[in-house]
Amino acid sequence: MERQRWQESVLVDGYTRFCLTAIAVLLTVLIIGLWADGVPLARNAAAAEPMRYQPRSTLEITDMVRTQEQTNEKLDQIIRLLESGTAKVQVVQAAEAESGGKPSEVAPSETQQTTE
Image (cartoon, rainbow, N blue to C red; front, top):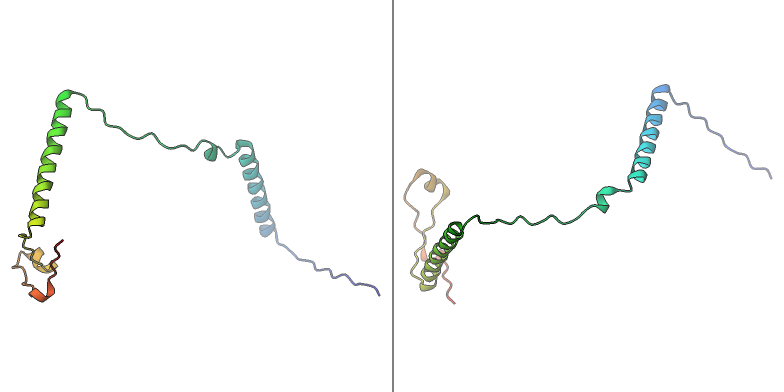
């Protein structure tokens, strides 16, 4: 029993042959370039140095501390107000807020009050 081999011939035009040759050449150049460099981006990767602010003078440091203390005082006032439960919240619709209209009233059943 003899096997028959099938042969198919494909006719490729000049433009297709040129494109395939250009792709093969570019891939070869890319592979050689990667091999020669040894993938430097992966080797040289490192964490960046953190940016640190260095105050220039004692006055600058004092000013920064004073500003931080004022911020802490304001936050303490807000926390006390929220913990006391005396804060009143009104819901304002977006259109009314933009036009400066009167806030809409919210029925007590729609509000939620949580205390801990």
